[in-house]
Image (cartoon, rainbow, N blue to C red):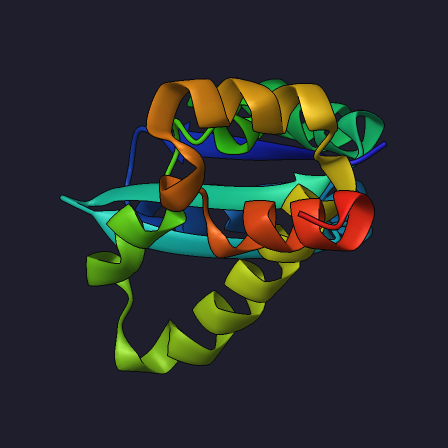
Length: 150
């Protein structure tokens, strides 16, 4: 099963590239071989952040390489927060630059697909209790319409 992760580093992408240059060829290959359904990365205040939709074992392998190479990071599984409407991807839209705007749009589409595939009626009912039927997201309304004819 795929989950959504936020990996926040303690340095800029430029500094992380310098770290990466010191990785062994084997570790570089492990990073290159990481399977991710989708990802988006951005930088804010010289801190690199990476969002990915991936299998937990893939993320664990990736983090193992980072740890072995003493790269500091903070990881959060944001899957539940996304499903419960507590993480809004649109809040990072102001960090999107022209050079990565297409990648961002693809990530948002992939995230919408992930949300749709991971929704269930209990999550939707909880969201209705919290925000009301009219305030559900487009994906939540689509899920209800397609699965429950509402």
